[in-house]
Amino acid sequence: MVISAGAGCFAADKTAEVCRTQDEAAAALREAMKEREESAGICLITDTAAEDSEDIIGDIFERALEHTGDPVEGDYLRFQYESCNASAKPVSENGEKAVLLTYTLSYYDDAEQEAAVDEKAGEIIGSLDLDGMDDAEKTRAIYSYLLDNVEYDYDNLADEDYTLKRTAYAALIDGKAVCQGYSAAFYRLLLTAGVDNRIIFGTGINSSGESEDHTWNIVRIGDAYYNTDVTRDDELGEDRYFLKAENPFSEDHIRSEEYLKEEFASAYEISETDYGKTGISILDHIGAAALEFRKLIQRLIEAL
Image (tube, rainbow, N blue to C red):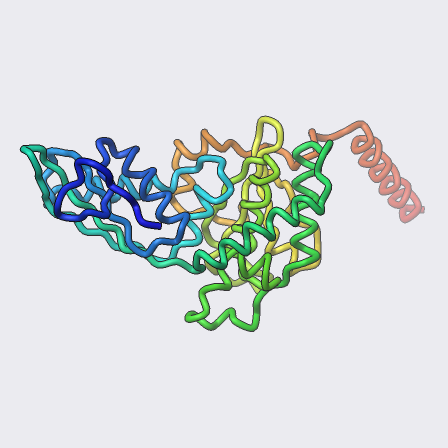
């Protein structure tokens, strides 16, 4: 994709898109990233000097990665790009000042692979027959699909040059991925099905008790969000981390600092109870009472 500037383009870069607000600039950058463009030029109309534009560069980039609810934007882009470098230089024409921003990007996958994911995601959602399901049922269906069709990529785990393992492409097309690939695939499929969710990055404690970089998802069901770790459940062969409350989930899933900030936490409030569990039921009380009664009888027998 070539970003077209149209009339009024500054002579410094005829391919740069002229933007008059940072939101416009972020939208242009977002579209370039969705197309896996390796370079994006943006001509931002501003009085800010090029040497003082570092904050602008970062702000536009973060706005480009904001969660929008679109399956191929937001966290999907955030966890599918590999690196970004940016530069700025002053430009002017007809007395109007601007800064030419150039973003140089690399990705874990390419445009052709993304096209394959587009097609595959549509096939998967169609095959799951989600019509009539509520959000929890849709989440369960997609979660189960990933457990049945993706396996953890131990073969390439230590190969830092093989970055495709971190993508939805690896999960959905190759059927083998690491946590980042699982989370990206889950994020994309859920949003395609209309279920809001986010990808969380942090530290996970694996079954060996070791700390490692890890990603998982928080999924909105009703008015609250729930933690779900497809990767760990697939590795363990258990249903341990599906739609869970913050505790005890957070004992072995420690969020990175950006996800602990009040702004994020208040926007994505985690349920105080696991999904489907509303507290101690009457059956729980009866079960607990029966257990205490059996203990009492046992003590009486032992005392005889």
